[in-house]
Image (cartoon, rainbow, N blue to C red):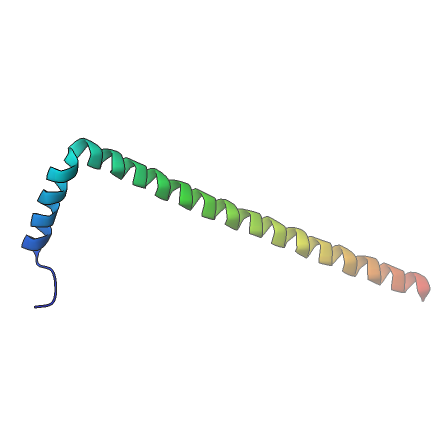
Length: 76
């Protein structure tokens, strides 16, 4: 009733192929694939950088705690 049927999608696909041609569509598909791949790579690199920063911060906190305990022992 309100949805798009398979026939309507097929007609739209045929019109798109006729308008753009298969070479252009293939090129656009590969460009889109490259863009998605680049986006995923950027996201994963950002996640890795955040994990490294988090690890460095945790190590820094641990070192500060150890240093404070040593200072307390020296003053006692």
